[in-house]
Every structure is written in structure tokens, then in C-alpha cells.
Image (cartoon, rainbow, N blue to C red; front, side):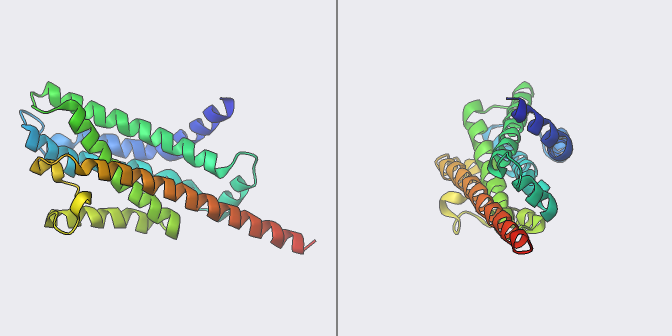
Amino acid sequence: MEKFLKISAVNFKYNLLPHLTVSLILCLAAPLFIGTKNLDAYQVAKVMEGYVALIGIVLLIPVFIPDMNKDIRDLTASKQTPMFFLHVIRILWALLFLLILGGLFLFVLKRENCVFDFGEMFYTVMANALFLGGMGMFVFALFDQAVFAYMIPLVYYVINFGGRKQLGNFYLFSMQAGHFSEKHYLFFGGLVFMAGAVFIRKIATSLSFSLCYHKGGSHK
């Protein structure tokens, strides 16, 4: 538990805090860009699917940002605590704040006399956020490039404005058309993306450390 708390504190101070701040600003700025009062279910879906779900990108992709410095990554990998453990802790905190922000935003909408099913809409925004954020994490793990990690899910997001014909069950804005079942595909798709990203990072870190170890040994 002590190790978990120490890692969490470092992650919060140096990695999570700035991205959490951006997410909070996005939520607080919502009334400036979109309506938040007296909305019906369709309008709430539009807000949650098309705006609030973007915080999934903001919170989840940075999970791998501390690893971008190869020297730090190799140093961390050589420590007793596995990189896998570090990544899981970062993901758990990102998910926790994603849940909190999504829930609080919906709570505010309820206070603003919006009419919608809370549980259904909460699952909706989580599914979209996990899918977009998980996609970014997966791209990050594959290419080790933050630019690609942010660009690909944003491009996918824009493609959805062309309609659901080409995207099928992975259409982000299905609730605006009154269709809920697609959210299951997005939710579990996001989990698969995240699991795949962590697995790829685990393999890449192990290979990198192994190469460094053998290279160091060859100079002895």
C-alpha cells in the first residue's frame, strides 16, 4: 500500500494534475459552448457524446507520457517495481477521475432541469470516453508518439459526423438517434484497446531492458 501511495502521489503531481486541470476547464466551460439547461434526452446525449466524452482522450492518453524519455523509461524498467504496475496505477486514477467528472457533469445537468436517464447516460459517456481514450493509448503504445496518439482518436471522432453507415456498432453518436446497444461495443472495445496498449508496452519495455542489459554485458 505504501508503494501504491508513493507512485500515485508522484503520478498525480507530475503527470495527472495538468491533464485533470484541462478536463475540469473543459467541463466548466461547457455552458459557453453548449446548452446545459432544460435539455431533453436527445440534447443531453449530444452534449455527453459529442463534448464531455472528449475528456477520455485528455485523461487516458497521458498514461504513457512519462515513458517518452527513453533514459527514464529504461531506468524505471530496471527498478524492482514493474512498469506494468505503474501503468495500471496511472490508468486506475485516470479512470477514477473520468468517472467522477462524468458523474458530476450529469448531476449538474439534472440540477439544470434536464430530462434523461442518469444510468443510461452515464454509461454512454463512459463508453465513448473509454473508446476514444483507449484508442489513443493503443496508438501511443504502437508508435511511441504522442502526436499520433491524440490525432487518431480525434480523426475518428470527426469521421463520426459523416454518419453511422461506415462505422456500424462503433458509431459514437448512436444515443442521439435513440440507439443504446452500440455503447456495449464501444465500452468493451475501449477496454480491449487499453489492455492491448498495456500489453504492448510491457513487451516493449521488457525487450528494451533486455537489449540494454545484454549491451552492457558485452562491454564488460
